[in-house]
Length: 196
Image 1 (cartoon, rainbow, N blue to C red):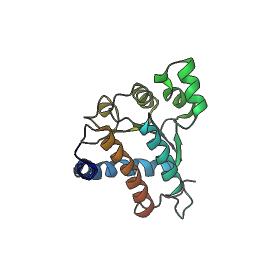
Image 2 (image 1 turned 45 degrees about the horizontal axis):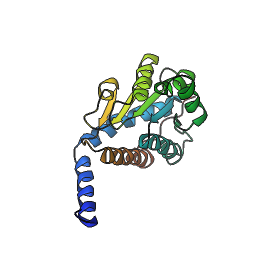
Image 3 (image 1 turned 120 degrees about the vertical axis):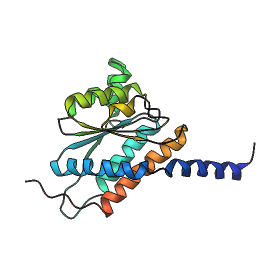
Image 4 (image 1 turned 45 degrees about the vertical axis):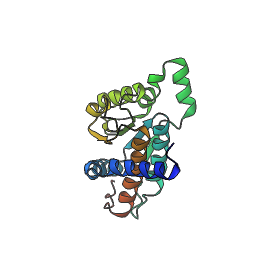
């Protein structure tokens, strides 16, 4: 045991290292137009993931849905598929856990919507199945992952792969990206024109 202070310092340094690569700015440059287009066209943005990634999905929906209101009255239409506990558990119990997100998308999604799958490993079967269905249905897909990207990296239109093999650091960066996108959309992004 090296002590608390050295451990904290090392953890912070490792997290900082995962943020130092220019991939983060590149990700924001690619994701912002997708989100703005979805808002402009009245599309729905679906977020989903497991465990800590489920929490990030739910957190993102709250932030982007509430904190980015603009003077033109347009808002982001967002759904966290992890928040419908009844549907989630029904599909897990009556079908298979790998179907908990894809089955909800079958009911809710339409061509032109956006799917944001979050998986630290990039290999969560239910996230992959939902992304696969999203592509077939004509949704734009974004994947937040780490640990090399797993299968998710090659399945999505925009992959964001945190350069870390630590689940904690990967999830730290995913949450930071959630806050970064929210802040940018609130402070810097031009208001989308109203669609009549």
